[in-house]
Amino acid sequence: MRKKRIWKFVIVLAKIALAVFVIYYLFKSEWLTKDAFTRLFRVEHILFILLSGSFYLITQILCTSRLVLLLRAIHFPLRFFRIFKLVMIGNFFNTIIPGMIGGDFIKSLYLMKGEEGKRGQSAGIVIMDRALGFLALLWIGGVSLIYLLWQKSKVLNSFHNEMYIAIGAIGCISIFFGVLIIFSRNERARRKIASVFTAFFRKGILYNMLDGFGALMKHRLILGYSLLVSVLIQIFSLAGLLILANLVSETLPDMITLAGVSAIVVLVNIIPVTPGNLGWTELIAALCWSAVGSNAGATIFLNWRIVTVMFSLPWGLVFLSMTDWRK
Image 1 (cartoon, helix red, strand yellow):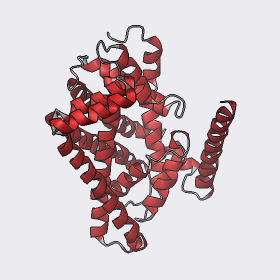
Image 2 (cartoon, one colour):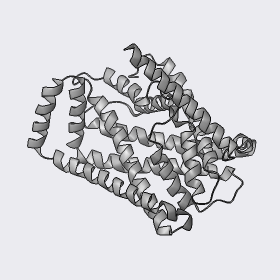
Image 3 (cartoon, one colour):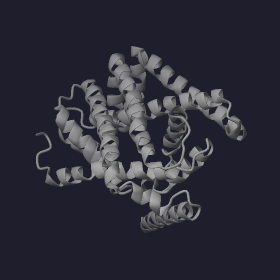
Image 4 (cartoon, one colour):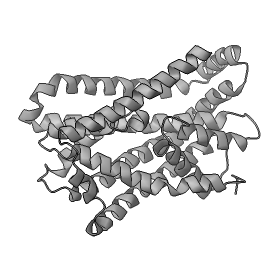
């Protein structure tokens, strides 16, 4: 047990060191500059910050709507504002203190407190909520890759093989998800799976989490609407990010191209490399944006990180003041 804790501590230190090194490298290579960083805080740019933050809040309202929809599958009644508060508190933990306590864990913990029956179903719904967001991100990324290939840009010629592989992988994952939905419609198959999981988990919290998945699969209309909301979340998130492109002084490619490469950055960003992927996200953004002729990728994504932190920070105080989470 002690060795395990030591290894965890070493891994955390290594991730922090990597984040510091990457940020140093970005400044050394001038993909990040002091002027570009301070430009965000100029008075004349407040409108862009507020507009970008507004799009961020819209995405969180949509995230709340998706979770409300998914919780209906297990007949879990909860007021919209309460779930919105949980979503924003989850973002606070993901952005302000990344790598310590995940936002999904916080949401699951509070939702499970309100369950009267099968304790753990709501945690399964939260996991499915994240999975649907990931699937929508894959689709947006796939469409972006197809668009960039269709452009036949010379600067992307050396990446064609990788782009085709990524599109193929996205297609396979989407097909797997579709087969899973079709398979789950079969009542006999669901009973068989339930009996297998009962033997393994003996109807504990883990079993109830899987039961939450099964309940959702029975409500395909809810699943469909949730997928649509997930796509809208990614679109509005990209819009909030690209608003900050108005803060850079260089001439940028067209917004559709920037949206495409930015979607790929967000997709790659699901790989946890550093705490909160600090530095890692900006590095990937710098590389992807430079592939289409812009050096502003790291700056734009760093500014987006700052905006999301600014709009998430107040919800930490909400978390500290919460006494009865059902109100």
